[in-house]
Length: 195
Ligand SMILES: Cc1cc2nc3c(=O)[nH]c(=O)nc-3n(C[C@H](O)[C@H](O)[C@H](O)COP(=O)(O)O)c2cc1C
Image (cartoon, rainbow, N blue to C red; front, top):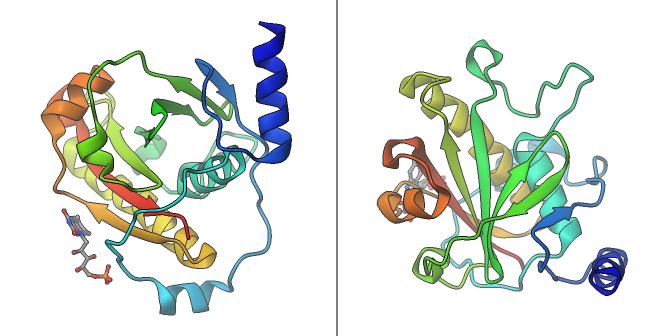
């Protein structure tokens, strides 16, 4: 136990791509710097060349915070949401496994799924999977809210010089089984390639 905590601490400090434990406390996200917004808007584009290095914990913390992280004391986020329901959940698929992001605690919780999702990752550095709880939100609002999160990720990746693609074409049935949710609650995915 002590040894694995020490490994995790060292990995975080050295920003090594180690994702072994069931609950991973992410480092504080970097909230300053980056490309000027208007330049990022001008440069934003879809790139399907998403093969790349696995993410470090810092890179995970940064992209997730940009996507839909907490920005205010009242818990509001980088992305707006209809009626402030904040229903969009983000799961992260890497070569190490599938994790669910807890935005409030800045933590990744490892899924115990044994389903092979490598065809969904398709060699990317990571894939974000956007889901929602359909008890909490209507599908139309969830689709829109997800679009805002996706655009945040596009702009963040542009700023970093990473490749990314927003994906409607994903295996929702398989991802739903892995995430233990209903197929209709799996909205979109986003593959990211770190360069
Ligand atoms: C809702 C939505 C679903 C998309 N699904 C896919 C997809 O399944 N596969 C893919 O290669 N690109 C997908 N894209 C990316 C679009 O093809 C891309 O945004 C479009 O060609 C315009 O290019 P740009 O993003 O560089 O402006 C999707 C985009 C959106 C907004």
